[in-house]
Image 1 (cartoon, rainbow, N blue to C red):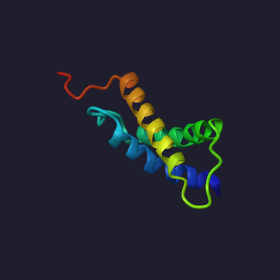
Image 2 (tube, one colour):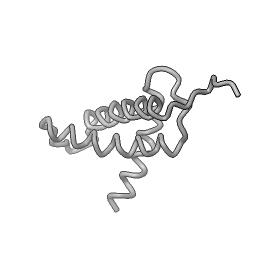
Image 3 (cartoon, rainbow, N blue to C red):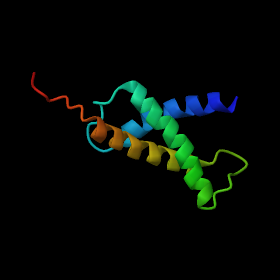
Image 4 (cartoon, rainbow, N blue to C red):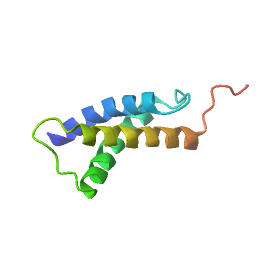
Length: 90
């Protein structure tokens, strides 16, 4: 059941990461945004626990902010690596 939660959180975090990323990052496909979000959740939670985060009884906002920032970095990296440019001439 945890994997479904990670996928749902990854979709949301990926879209938030795309929103937070600087510049126009609309040139990557939605499936890549979702993968960046899932990666952001997994890597963000790992970074959070590596730096001493142990969670809280309620919603752990710091863990979610780290996940969003990691997803934003992954969206920027994916946009740069895919090299899709909306302003290309045919």
